[in-house]
Length: 146
Image 1: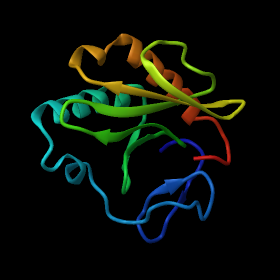
Image 2: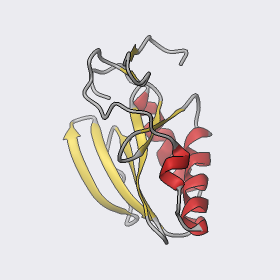
Image 3: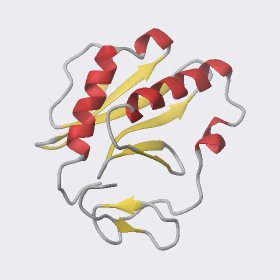
Image 4: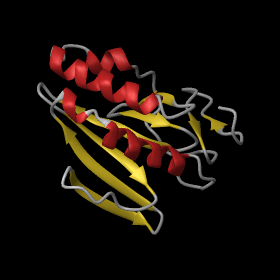
């Protein structure tokens, strides 16, 4: 990452905006998350990954329970890969006003976690790409949160 230096966990190598950030330390990978998944689920994940990494300098950051997409902070994640859909979230500075958003968690005045379920390739569209760009902007902000 070309932006301000991030702290790197000495055990797993994952990068964070603050030293000692709590996390699931371990060797996690995208192939591990995709193992034994249906072709539809893998296609949905790969499509989301393609949109998320197209917004800029993004690190794919697999963890124990999710696959994150990180600028300075994790701005989006695939939280669940089911047989016929994926559950994702995108963190933005304001709530996303759309019927596609299933739930919004307001964590701070500038931190909204927008939860979506993607069940078809057609949902990997320009609207979703625009939300990921908003998330990428949020993820680049200098903050103590990750």
